[in-house]
Length: 134
Length: 86
Image (cartoon, rainbow over the protein chains, first blue to last red):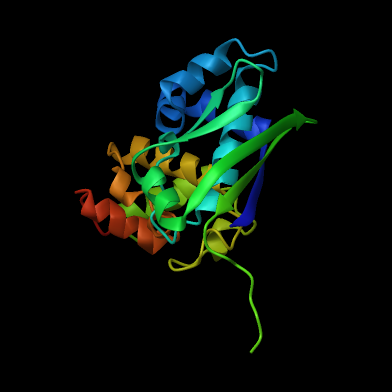
């Protein structure tokens, strides 16, 4: 097993601008119904809550390493746990990618401040990425 | 320049957040290399959908689909958008 990590940062103002420009169309294309519902009454505010989820999706994508065909953002769902932490739920092509890459046991950490949302994802991968010289 | 190119460039200018001016953007220039983030590519996709009244299906959600003006033009033609040369 090898531990792999992905990290991403998103400006909250970018999310606010997308919501203002595209409204529900934006949220429906990028976030699941559950993600939108969980973000609506979030203490950090709607746009910031969505920004942390988008950063988390991108951090997870960096672990999944799609070659070119990107899973739809809704296939990488960032759910709230009762204890306040987040969990990753993959579906459809994103789940297939995780299986193909041998990715398991992903965990997330997210934070926000200064107008930015950041997320780090850690996962276990079955294949080694250690290079050796012969 | 075709109607597609004019509108695609307008959407890119508004939403891609490139580090270069639109006037210096070549049809095959890599938009990601020129500063378009993943989130900006979402905005570009939605802007194109509004402008051309189409919806990009999941199978077109590839980095290459939105990599350049010419790649976007090809995707729009595949979605049935009619190209008219001015």
